[in-house]
Amino acid sequence: MTIQDDIIQLVRDASMKKILFLPHAIRQMSRVDRMISTSEVHKAIDNGEIIEDYPEDVRGHSCLILGHGEDNRPIHIVCSPKEDYLAIITAYLPDYEQWEDNFRKRKKT
Image (cartoon, rainbow, N blue to C red):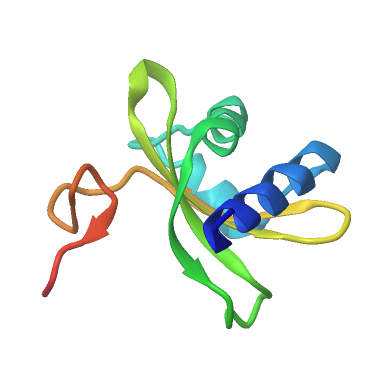
C-alpha cells in the first residue's frame, strides 16, 4: 500500500462520517459556470484519485483529488480529512490551459 492509498483511505473514511463544505468551496461550487453538486463531490471522492498531496498545509494535511461528475466531467476537489469529518476546501472544474495529462499534472509556466 502506498502513501497515496493511505491518504485516499483516510479521505474516504472521513467522508463516510460527515462532509463539511467550507464557505470557499460553496462559493466555488455554486458559480454559474460550474454548478458542482454535492453528489458530484461524493462521486469524485468515492471514485477519484489523489493527484497532489499537501502534508504541510496550514489547514492540516490535505490533498487534491481528480474525480468525475455528471456527464463524466472532470472535477478537482481539495479536501482535508479530520477525525470526525472531511473538510471540502474547494471544488472546481480544471482548466485545459493550466492542466495537462487529463488534468493530473499542472502545466509548467
